[in-house]
Image 1 (cartoon, helix red, strand yellow):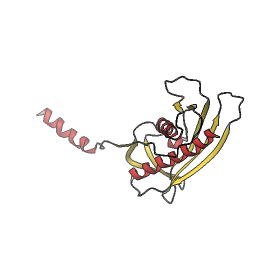
Image 2: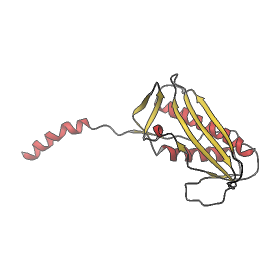
Image 3: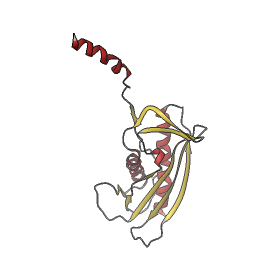
Image 4: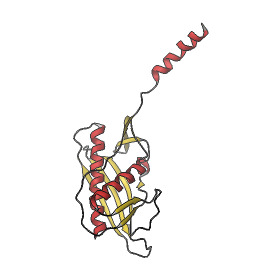
Length: 186
């Protein structure tokens, strides 16, 4: 009888449990290959604005409010995912070159180093995805001059669904890779 009472007492708690979260990931997208010499390129850990550094997907940061996707999360830490996908995007755009994440297990002396600081990666008031950030491309020599560029890219998702938001974010990251590949080939 006591076990039955305990079970009955626990039923309301089980009913209140939230469902498993829906997990999303960014994917590499096709881009235009940039001809040029083979290079070894290190991608430093992507810098990420603090408001984005959370497991829940940030839908928007407009009107002084943060809007989060309900029960929808990134499948891995966002900075790690951005670095992984950006490295793959760059590899697709720089045929013959090797792109590796500096934070990974590979220790090779690179010819070029890419640093990317993401300041915004969400939707604006109109629903368009905005990727804003700064990029630096330099040689390993700290005395060398770095090329820098400020990026502000927008992509309109097909719908307000989170899957379409994430697809648009992937496209924006691919467009950033296009710009970075051009910087690397200069």
